Image (cartoon, rainbow, N blue to C red; front, side):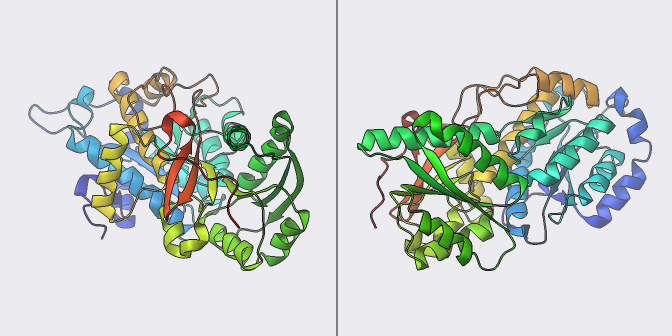
Length: 418
Protein backbone atom coordinates (compact mmCIF):
# COMPACT_ATOMS: atom_id res chain seq x y z
CA UNK A 1 0.00 0.00 0.00
CA UNK A 2 1.29 3.47 -0.85
CA UNK A 3 2.47 5.42 2.13
CA UNK A 4 0.18 8.20 3.24
CA UNK A 5 -2.81 7.03 1.21
CA UNK A 6 -6.09 7.88 2.91
CA UNK A 7 -9.38 6.06 2.61
CA UNK A 8 -11.16 8.90 0.86
CA UNK A 9 -8.54 9.06 -1.88
CA UNK A 10 -8.38 5.34 -2.67
CA UNK A 11 -9.39 4.11 -6.05
CA UNK A 12 -12.35 1.73 -6.00
CA UNK A 13 -11.32 -1.92 -6.07
CA UNK A 14 -12.83 -4.34 -8.58
CA UNK A 15 -15.17 -5.76 -5.93
CA UNK A 16 -16.19 -2.31 -4.73
CA UNK A 17 -16.73 -1.18 -8.32
CA UNK A 18 -19.13 -4.06 -8.97
CA UNK A 19 -20.99 -3.34 -5.74
CA UNK A 20 -21.07 0.35 -6.60
CA UNK A 21 -22.48 -0.36 -10.05
CA UNK A 22 -25.27 -2.49 -8.60
CA UNK A 23 -26.08 -0.10 -5.79
CA UNK A 24 -26.26 2.86 -8.13
CA UNK A 25 -28.38 1.19 -10.79
CA UNK A 26 -30.77 4.13 -10.78
CA UNK A 27 -28.11 6.80 -10.34
CA UNK A 28 -27.63 7.39 -14.06
CA UNK A 29 -31.36 7.88 -14.49
CA UNK A 30 -31.58 10.56 -11.83
CA UNK A 31 -28.13 12.06 -12.41
CA UNK A 32 -29.55 15.15 -14.08
CA UNK A 33 -31.32 16.03 -10.85
CA UNK A 34 -28.10 16.54 -8.92
CA UNK A 35 -28.05 15.34 -5.31
CA UNK A 36 -31.30 13.86 -4.01
CA UNK A 37 -32.71 15.23 -0.78
CA UNK A 38 -30.48 14.28 2.12
CA UNK A 39 -31.86 13.47 5.55
CA UNK A 40 -31.18 16.20 8.05
CA UNK A 41 -27.79 15.60 9.66
CA UNK A 42 -26.79 12.88 7.19
CA UNK A 43 -23.52 13.16 5.31
CA UNK A 44 -23.92 14.06 1.61
CA UNK A 45 -23.26 11.24 -0.85
CA UNK A 46 -19.77 10.86 -2.25
CA UNK A 47 -19.03 12.41 -5.63
CA UNK A 48 -17.77 9.63 -7.89
CA UNK A 49 -15.05 10.52 -10.37
CA UNK A 50 -13.97 7.89 -12.87
CA UNK A 51 -10.52 7.60 -14.36
CA UNK A 52 -9.07 5.41 -17.12
CA UNK A 53 -5.32 4.81 -17.27
CA UNK A 54 -2.95 1.93 -18.14
CA UNK A 55 -2.69 0.56 -14.60
CA UNK A 56 -1.12 -2.66 -15.90
CA UNK A 57 0.66 -3.79 -19.04
CA UNK A 58 3.64 -2.23 -20.77
CA UNK A 59 2.68 1.27 -19.58
CA UNK A 60 1.70 0.20 -16.07
CA UNK A 61 4.44 2.27 -14.42
CA UNK A 62 3.24 5.43 -16.17
CA UNK A 63 -0.42 4.76 -15.40
CA UNK A 64 0.22 4.15 -11.71
CA UNK A 65 2.16 7.42 -11.55
CA UNK A 66 -0.83 9.32 -12.90
CA UNK A 67 -3.19 7.56 -10.50
CA UNK A 68 -1.03 8.75 -7.61
CA UNK A 69 -1.40 12.33 -8.83
CA UNK A 70 -5.17 11.92 -8.96
CA UNK A 71 -5.29 10.41 -5.49
CA UNK A 72 -3.15 13.14 -3.98
CA UNK A 73 -5.38 15.90 -5.34
CA UNK A 74 -8.52 14.08 -4.18
CA UNK A 75 -7.04 13.66 -0.72
CA UNK A 76 -6.10 17.34 -0.50
CA UNK A 77 -9.54 18.50 -1.64
CA UNK A 78 -11.32 16.15 0.76
CA UNK A 79 -9.06 17.13 3.66
CA UNK A 80 -9.86 20.79 2.95
CA UNK A 81 -13.58 20.17 3.37
CA UNK A 82 -14.64 18.52 0.13
CA UNK A 83 -16.93 20.33 -2.30
CA UNK A 84 -18.29 23.07 -0.08
CA UNK A 85 -21.09 24.09 -2.47
CA UNK A 86 -22.42 20.52 -2.12
CA UNK A 87 -22.39 20.39 1.68
CA UNK A 88 -18.81 19.18 1.86
CA UNK A 89 -19.36 16.08 -0.27
CA UNK A 90 -16.14 14.14 -0.72
CA UNK A 91 -14.63 13.03 -4.02
CA UNK A 92 -14.04 9.32 -4.60
CA UNK A 93 -12.09 7.80 -7.48
CA UNK A 94 -13.27 4.81 -9.50
CA UNK A 95 -10.52 2.95 -11.34
CA UNK A 96 -10.64 1.58 -14.88
CA UNK A 97 -7.56 -0.12 -16.33
CA UNK A 98 -7.09 0.44 -20.06
CA UNK A 99 -4.09 -1.94 -20.09
CA UNK A 100 -2.83 0.36 -22.85
CA UNK A 101 -5.54 -0.92 -25.21
CA UNK A 102 -7.87 1.55 -26.98
CA UNK A 103 -10.66 -1.04 -27.37
CA UNK A 104 -11.01 -1.33 -23.58
CA UNK A 105 -11.82 2.39 -23.34
CA UNK A 106 -15.34 1.85 -24.71
CA UNK A 107 -16.53 -0.51 -21.99
CA UNK A 108 -14.61 1.45 -19.33
CA UNK A 109 -16.43 4.70 -20.07
CA UNK A 110 -19.76 2.91 -20.20
CA UNK A 111 -19.17 1.16 -16.85
CA UNK A 112 -18.06 4.35 -15.14
CA UNK A 113 -21.07 6.24 -16.47
CA UNK A 114 -23.48 3.54 -15.26
CA UNK A 115 -21.82 3.58 -11.85
CA UNK A 116 -22.63 7.26 -11.46
CA UNK A 117 -19.39 9.07 -12.32
CA UNK A 118 -19.98 12.83 -12.54
CA UNK A 119 -16.96 13.07 -14.84
CA UNK A 120 -14.26 10.83 -16.27
CA UNK A 121 -10.52 11.55 -16.49
CA UNK A 122 -7.82 9.94 -18.62
CA UNK A 123 -6.16 8.34 -20.39
CA UNK A 124 -2.37 8.98 -20.81
CA UNK A 125 -2.21 7.52 -24.34
CA UNK A 126 -3.65 9.63 -27.13
CA UNK A 127 -5.01 6.55 -28.91
CA UNK A 128 -6.99 5.48 -25.83
CA UNK A 129 -8.11 9.02 -25.03
CA UNK A 130 -9.47 9.56 -28.56
CA UNK A 131 -11.78 6.58 -28.11
CA UNK A 132 -12.75 7.32 -24.50
CA UNK A 133 -13.60 10.96 -25.22
CA UNK A 134 -15.77 9.91 -28.16
CA UNK A 135 -17.82 7.55 -25.99
CA UNK A 136 -18.07 10.15 -23.21
CA UNK A 137 -19.37 12.63 -25.78
CA UNK A 138 -22.01 10.15 -26.90
CA UNK A 139 -23.09 9.60 -23.28
CA UNK A 140 -22.84 13.32 -22.48
CA UNK A 141 -20.40 12.81 -19.60
CA UNK A 142 -17.76 15.51 -18.98
CA UNK A 143 -14.34 14.14 -19.91
CA UNK A 144 -11.34 15.93 -18.37
CA UNK A 145 -8.08 14.87 -19.97
CA UNK A 146 -5.21 14.03 -17.65
CA UNK A 147 -2.50 13.39 -20.24
CA UNK A 148 -2.95 12.93 -24.00
CA UNK A 149 -1.21 15.24 -26.44
CA UNK A 150 -2.77 14.49 -29.84
CA UNK A 151 -4.48 17.56 -31.30
CA UNK A 152 -7.47 15.49 -32.41
CA UNK A 153 -8.58 15.07 -28.79
CA UNK A 154 -9.97 18.62 -28.89
CA UNK A 155 -10.44 19.28 -32.61
CA UNK A 156 -13.47 17.09 -33.30
CA UNK A 157 -16.14 19.56 -32.27
CA UNK A 158 -16.87 17.81 -28.98
CA UNK A 159 -18.65 19.72 -26.20
CA UNK A 160 -17.79 17.50 -23.24
CA UNK A 161 -13.98 17.20 -23.57
CA UNK A 162 -11.61 19.54 -21.72
CA UNK A 163 -7.81 19.44 -21.70
CA UNK A 164 -5.55 21.41 -19.35
CA UNK A 165 -2.16 20.36 -20.75
CA UNK A 166 -0.56 21.68 -23.97
CA UNK A 167 -1.72 19.86 -27.09
CA UNK A 168 0.73 18.51 -29.64
CA UNK A 169 0.89 21.75 -31.59
CA UNK A 170 1.50 23.85 -28.48
CA UNK A 171 4.07 21.41 -27.10
CA UNK A 172 6.02 21.03 -30.35
CA UNK A 173 5.96 24.65 -31.46
CA UNK A 174 7.00 25.89 -28.02
CA UNK A 175 9.82 23.34 -27.74
CA UNK A 176 11.23 24.34 -31.14
CA UNK A 177 10.94 28.01 -30.16
CA UNK A 178 12.82 27.33 -26.89
CA UNK A 179 15.62 25.55 -28.78
CA UNK A 180 16.04 28.60 -31.02
CA UNK A 181 15.98 31.03 -28.08
CA UNK A 182 18.51 29.04 -26.04
CA UNK A 183 20.80 28.57 -29.04
CA UNK A 184 20.68 32.31 -29.81
CA UNK A 185 21.42 33.18 -26.19
CA UNK A 186 24.41 30.81 -26.33
CA UNK A 187 25.65 32.27 -29.63
CA UNK A 188 25.18 28.90 -31.33
CA UNK A 189 23.72 28.03 -34.71
CA UNK A 190 21.15 25.23 -34.92
CA UNK A 191 20.06 24.47 -38.47
CA UNK A 192 19.25 20.74 -38.56
CA UNK A 193 17.26 18.31 -36.41
CA UNK A 194 17.22 14.50 -36.44
CA UNK A 195 14.00 13.25 -34.81
CA UNK A 196 13.45 9.80 -33.28
CA UNK A 197 9.90 9.10 -32.11
CA UNK A 198 7.53 6.31 -31.16
CA UNK A 199 5.08 5.32 -33.89
CA UNK A 200 1.87 5.93 -31.91
CA UNK A 201 -0.48 8.92 -32.19
CA UNK A 202 1.65 10.48 -29.43
CA UNK A 203 4.99 10.49 -31.24
CA UNK A 204 3.70 11.03 -34.77
CA UNK A 205 1.63 14.07 -33.79
CA UNK A 206 4.54 15.79 -32.05
CA UNK A 207 7.07 14.99 -34.76
CA UNK A 208 4.69 16.24 -37.43
CA UNK A 209 4.41 19.61 -35.73
CA UNK A 210 8.17 19.88 -35.23
CA UNK A 211 8.61 19.30 -38.97
CA UNK A 212 6.04 22.05 -39.60
CA UNK A 213 7.35 24.66 -37.16
CA UNK A 214 11.13 24.16 -37.42
CA UNK A 215 11.47 26.28 -40.61
CA UNK A 216 9.84 29.22 -38.83
CA UNK A 217 12.90 29.26 -36.56
CA UNK A 218 15.52 28.63 -39.24
CA UNK A 219 15.70 24.86 -38.67
CA UNK A 220 14.91 21.76 -40.71
CA UNK A 221 14.09 18.18 -39.68
CA UNK A 222 16.48 16.28 -41.93
CA UNK A 223 15.28 12.85 -40.81
CA UNK A 224 12.37 11.55 -38.73
CA UNK A 225 12.66 7.92 -37.64
CA UNK A 226 9.73 6.07 -36.02
CA UNK A 227 10.01 3.00 -33.76
CA UNK A 228 7.63 0.80 -31.78
CA UNK A 229 7.48 1.65 -28.05
CA UNK A 230 7.37 -2.11 -27.41
CA UNK A 231 10.66 -2.67 -29.26
CA UNK A 232 13.37 -4.18 -27.08
CA UNK A 233 16.12 -3.00 -29.44
CA UNK A 234 16.23 0.41 -31.13
CA UNK A 235 19.82 0.28 -32.36
CA UNK A 236 18.83 0.29 -36.06
CA UNK A 237 16.72 3.41 -35.60
CA UNK A 238 19.36 5.13 -33.48
CA UNK A 239 21.92 4.30 -36.17
CA UNK A 240 19.86 6.28 -38.69
CA UNK A 241 19.75 9.23 -36.31
CA UNK A 242 23.51 9.12 -35.81
CA UNK A 243 24.14 8.93 -39.56
CA UNK A 244 22.11 12.12 -40.10
CA UNK A 245 24.78 14.17 -38.29
CA UNK A 246 22.23 16.83 -37.32
CA UNK A 247 22.95 19.80 -35.04
CA UNK A 248 20.46 18.55 -32.46
CA UNK A 249 18.72 15.23 -31.85
CA UNK A 250 15.11 15.20 -30.66
CA UNK A 251 13.20 12.28 -29.20
CA UNK A 252 9.61 11.51 -28.20
CA UNK A 253 8.50 8.35 -26.42
CA UNK A 254 7.15 6.86 -23.20
CA UNK A 255 9.19 6.16 -20.08
CA UNK A 256 10.36 2.61 -20.74
CA UNK A 257 11.35 3.13 -24.36
CA UNK A 258 12.81 6.54 -23.51
CA UNK A 259 15.27 4.80 -21.18
CA UNK A 260 16.18 2.30 -23.90
CA UNK A 261 16.64 5.07 -26.45
CA UNK A 262 19.04 7.12 -24.34
CA UNK A 263 21.07 4.09 -23.30
CA UNK A 264 21.39 3.10 -26.95
CA UNK A 265 22.34 6.63 -28.02
CA UNK A 266 25.06 6.79 -25.38
CA UNK A 267 26.36 3.33 -26.26
CA UNK A 268 26.48 4.25 -29.95
CA UNK A 269 28.11 7.60 -29.13
CA UNK A 270 25.56 9.80 -30.88
CA UNK A 271 27.01 13.32 -30.94
CA UNK A 272 25.06 16.55 -31.29
CA UNK A 273 24.92 20.05 -29.81
CA UNK A 274 21.87 18.94 -27.88
CA UNK A 275 19.81 15.84 -27.09
CA UNK A 276 16.32 17.21 -26.53
CA UNK A 277 13.05 15.48 -25.76
CA UNK A 278 9.69 16.78 -26.90
CA UNK A 279 6.99 15.63 -24.49
CA UNK A 280 9.29 12.73 -23.62
CA UNK A 281 7.93 10.39 -20.95
CA UNK A 282 11.41 9.70 -19.58
CA UNK A 283 13.75 12.63 -20.20
CA UNK A 284 12.42 14.84 -17.40
CA UNK A 285 11.04 12.17 -15.09
CA UNK A 286 12.78 11.85 -11.68
CA UNK A 287 13.19 8.09 -12.14
CA UNK A 288 15.15 8.73 -15.36
CA UNK A 289 18.22 9.79 -13.41
CA UNK A 290 17.78 6.86 -11.02
CA UNK A 291 17.74 4.43 -13.94
CA UNK A 292 20.63 5.83 -15.97
CA UNK A 293 22.68 8.04 -13.66
CA UNK A 294 25.40 10.07 -15.38
CA UNK A 295 24.11 9.12 -18.82
CA UNK A 296 21.28 11.62 -18.32
CA UNK A 297 23.55 14.62 -17.72
CA UNK A 298 22.75 17.62 -19.96
CA UNK A 299 19.69 15.95 -21.56
CA UNK A 300 16.93 18.53 -22.19
CA UNK A 301 13.19 18.08 -22.54
CA UNK A 302 10.38 20.38 -23.63
CA UNK A 303 7.56 18.96 -21.59
CA UNK A 304 4.80 19.25 -19.02
CA UNK A 305 5.99 20.79 -15.79
CA UNK A 306 4.78 22.59 -12.73
CA UNK A 307 5.91 26.16 -12.11
CA UNK A 308 8.87 25.62 -9.72
CA UNK A 309 8.56 29.17 -8.39
CA UNK A 310 4.96 28.74 -7.25
CA UNK A 311 4.32 28.17 -3.53
CA UNK A 312 1.46 25.86 -4.54
CA UNK A 313 3.90 23.72 -6.52
CA UNK A 314 6.29 23.43 -3.60
CA UNK A 315 3.41 22.39 -1.36
CA UNK A 316 2.11 19.81 -3.85
CA UNK A 317 5.59 18.37 -4.45
CA UNK A 318 6.20 18.08 -0.70
CA UNK A 319 2.85 16.31 -0.21
CA UNK A 320 3.63 13.90 -3.04
CA UNK A 321 7.09 13.09 -1.68
CA UNK A 322 5.65 12.52 1.79
CA UNK A 323 2.87 10.27 0.44
CA UNK A 324 4.83 8.18 -2.05
CA UNK A 325 8.51 8.65 -1.22
CA UNK A 326 9.41 9.87 -4.72
CA UNK A 327 9.35 13.11 -6.71
CA UNK A 328 6.26 14.00 -8.74
CA UNK A 329 6.88 13.39 -12.45
CA UNK A 330 5.96 15.89 -15.18
CA UNK A 331 3.02 13.85 -16.50
CA UNK A 332 1.73 13.34 -12.97
CA UNK A 333 1.38 17.10 -12.66
CA UNK A 334 -1.32 16.91 -15.34
CA UNK A 335 -3.23 14.24 -13.46
CA UNK A 336 -3.05 16.29 -10.25
CA UNK A 337 -4.03 19.75 -11.54
CA UNK A 338 -7.14 18.67 -13.54
CA UNK A 339 -8.73 17.27 -10.37
CA UNK A 340 -8.67 20.83 -9.04
CA UNK A 341 -10.13 22.02 -12.35
CA UNK A 342 -13.03 19.60 -11.91
CA UNK A 343 -13.47 20.54 -8.23
CA UNK A 344 -13.63 24.21 -9.21
CA UNK A 345 -16.35 23.40 -11.75
CA UNK A 346 -18.32 21.43 -9.16
CA UNK A 347 -18.14 24.36 -6.74
CA UNK A 348 -19.47 26.77 -9.36
CA UNK A 349 -22.05 24.35 -10.76
CA UNK A 350 -23.37 23.56 -7.26
CA UNK A 351 -24.58 20.32 -8.78
CA UNK A 352 -23.50 16.87 -9.90
CA UNK A 353 -25.58 17.20 -13.06
CA UNK A 354 -23.47 16.45 -16.14
CA UNK A 355 -24.81 19.44 -18.05
CA UNK A 356 -24.22 21.84 -15.17
CA UNK A 357 -20.63 20.59 -14.76
CA UNK A 358 -19.96 20.86 -18.49
CA UNK A 359 -21.29 24.41 -18.52
CA UNK A 360 -19.14 25.33 -15.52
CA UNK A 361 -16.04 23.87 -17.19
CA UNK A 362 -16.57 26.11 -20.22
CA UNK A 363 -16.35 29.13 -17.90
CA UNK A 364 -13.20 28.03 -16.07
CA UNK A 365 -10.76 30.82 -15.20
CA UNK A 366 -8.32 29.57 -12.57
CA UNK A 367 -5.46 31.89 -11.71
CA UNK A 368 -4.28 30.06 -8.59
CA UNK A 369 -2.63 26.88 -9.88
CA UNK A 370 0.73 25.11 -10.22
CA UNK A 371 1.32 25.40 -13.97
CA UNK A 372 3.87 27.58 -15.83
CA UNK A 373 1.26 29.68 -17.58
CA UNK A 374 -1.43 32.33 -17.12
CA UNK A 375 -5.01 31.47 -16.12
CA UNK A 376 -6.40 28.02 -16.91
CA UNK A 377 -9.19 28.82 -19.36
CA UNK A 378 -10.74 26.66 -22.07
CA UNK A 379 -11.46 27.76 -25.62
CA UNK A 380 -14.61 26.72 -27.52
CA UNK A 381 -12.85 23.46 -28.43
CA UNK A 382 -12.13 22.58 -24.79
CA UNK A 383 -8.37 23.18 -25.08
CA UNK A 384 -6.60 25.25 -22.41
CA UNK A 385 -5.84 28.44 -24.34
CA UNK A 386 -2.85 29.38 -22.17
CA UNK A 387 -1.23 25.94 -21.87
CA UNK A 388 2.54 26.14 -21.94
CA UNK A 389 5.40 23.68 -21.88
CA UNK A 390 8.73 24.32 -20.17
CA UNK A 391 12.27 23.31 -21.08
CA UNK A 392 14.02 21.14 -18.51
CA UNK A 393 17.64 20.01 -18.31
CA UNK A 394 19.38 17.45 -16.13
CA UNK A 395 22.33 19.13 -14.45
CA UNK A 396 24.30 17.65 -11.58
CA UNK A 397 21.92 14.72 -11.44
CA UNK A 398 18.86 16.93 -10.97
CA UNK A 399 16.29 17.83 -13.62
CA UNK A 400 15.35 21.49 -13.43
CA UNK A 401 13.43 24.07 -15.44
CA UNK A 402 15.83 26.20 -17.49
CA UNK A 403 13.43 28.02 -19.86
CA UNK A 404 11.35 30.25 -20.18
CA UNK A 405 13.34 32.59 -18.00
CA UNK A 406 10.43 33.60 -15.74
CA UNK A 407 10.06 29.99 -14.56
CA UNK A 408 13.74 28.92 -14.63
CA UNK A 409 15.39 27.36 -11.60
CA UNK A 410 18.89 27.45 -13.02
CA UNK A 411 20.77 28.33 -16.22
CA UNK A 412 20.96 25.95 -19.16
CA UNK A 413 24.13 24.41 -20.59
CA UNK A 414 24.27 24.54 -24.40
CA UNK A 415 25.84 23.10 -26.45
CA UNK A 416 26.06 19.90 -24.45
CA UNK A 417 29.60 18.72 -23.64
CA UNK A 418 30.61 15.52 -25.43
